[in-house]
Image (tube, rainbow, N blue to C red; front, side, top):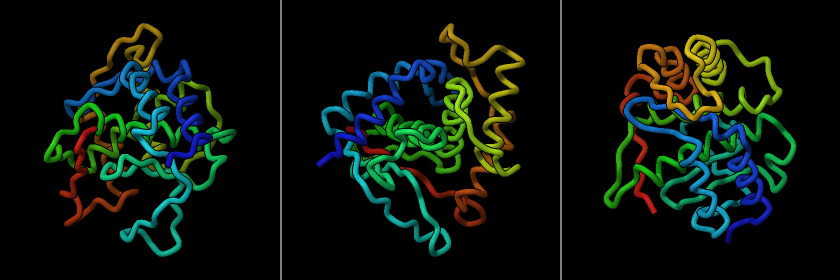
Length: 207
């Protein structure tokens, strides 16, 4: 059963005016503020469960704690605790990141599974998180240079300054794979999607 406190926290993030600034296309897939807004009912009605407790990742070093995680197989979002995202700015942006994976599940998932290269899946979610972080005026950092979030923020600043992307006009910014390459490489490193793991795919079955 979904945790109503956490579901309400997710809904607050998705109803934040800053989420309407998250409008871009990357790797042929769209991430838009209207799509986030359309998903609020999935959380309020429990189609996406919000639960306390984050399962460990066997591919990460022992003891590595994950704060927030969307699991598409179960349509479930996991959190460290019931207060997650209530005050912390970085936690709110983490919710935007995981909500992007849920958005992919909703809009691109299909019976039998839609396969998305995990590197591209994560790079896109990091970019969405960075746009939200920037446009919501959240505070945090400094972030480790070369990390996925740091590279995503660099890309957001570049696009916002150069072409006025992520403004209030709702215009969708087409992000080129070339511009996103440093972010893609950082996401691969952060998520251990290198070497033989570079071809791992995320699978979304939809709702």
